[in-house]
Amino acid sequence: MEQQEVITLLSSRELEKMRRVGRLAAELLDYLEPLVQPGVSTQALNDAAEEWTQARGAVSAPLGYKGSVIDFPRSICTSVNEVICHGIPSPDQILRDGDIINIDVTPILDGYHGDTSRTFFVGTPSPLARKLVEVTEEAMWRGIRAVKPGARIGDIGAAIQDYAEAHGFSVVRDFVGHGVHRIFHTAPQIPHYGTAGKGKKLRKGMVFTIEPMINVGTYEAEILADGWTALTADRKLSAQFEHTVAVTDDGVEVLTLAEAKVRA
Ligand code: MF3
Ligand code: CO
Ligand code: CO
Image (cartoon, rainbow, N blue to C red):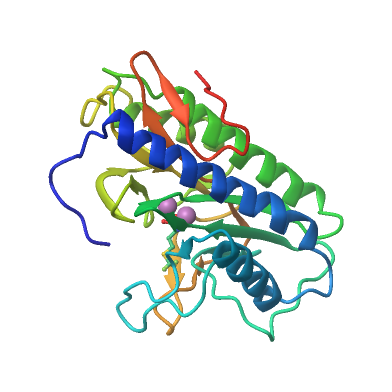
């Protein structure tokens, strides 16, 4: 992914635009959640998302997003079971009871991107799938709670990695969180593993995602010939949650919440 060197600090006017699109992104996931049922295709979820997004005057950033083999051909990412991220919705992919599916959405509104994802259960999960998804969500929150001015990027990854590995899971290395504002993927990179006290200092006005991908087995990933679909090398389960966050005066604001709420 393209990376600039300089980390942009957003003005309060820009942050207000990030809040608006972040809220929209969260509401899109809220809208999609009840559609996640056995028998539904990932294409149907994609089409519902595209229609909802257009009806709100927004644009789906993933659609046509530049790739190395092909540009991303759909409006959302749907990553089922052993797919780590960047799963491509398809009419041939029908959800089954016991699956887990990460839905990752990124609407653009007034030029700004809101990037968020959650992993949902299709019907009833296995005990292992439930544990993986719960640990992954809590790992994300631990990463978010490490964010404040003066903290370092390594503090985020360390908090996530410590928690995930304490539960016997592994942290994906090949995909990281990223700066996001007018640009979809930019500086800084936010690894979901690392060492507390290391890395660049966080400053008020920085905006980036925290999006840990946590695996039951190896953290190693493989990419399919489509250039997008990333799956676990051992084909065991992977889960992910993602929020877009801003560094505030004294902590962190989560921008991708349906009800705008500040978490610290
Ligand atoms: N939303 C994904 C992320 O969290 C990126 C998807 S790029 C796409 O960074 F082209 F696959 F949509
Ligand atoms: Co995303
Ligand atoms: Co992201």
